[in-house]
Length: 129
Image (cartoon, rainbow, N blue to C red; front, side, top):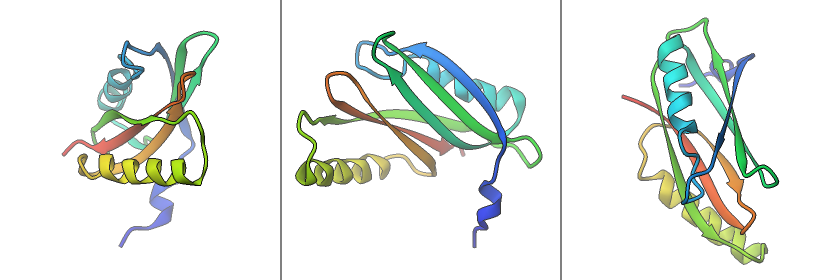
């Protein structure tokens, strides 16, 4: 059984980068993966914010350095474009989220970001077994 206190964390690292042609996070995911591996930390959470004016993304990583380290892998998946956000659109996005998550074993956490053309993308942080 898991214990919620295993997820508590107070250390953070920030990363800045540009989206690639597919609106994905470019090399930001590799930067996060490398930081976790190089610094031998236990990754706990991620955050993503897309800055429309700058056409850049800020990614945050929450972690702990006081417990055994493990490597992670990040995946970015499009959930589709939703020009109108209503109950039906949310249901569709929720179904797509579950479907995409099922293709990535060991999901630790996820984060959603939306581009200026209303494309919903999700980042999954998984345990790299």
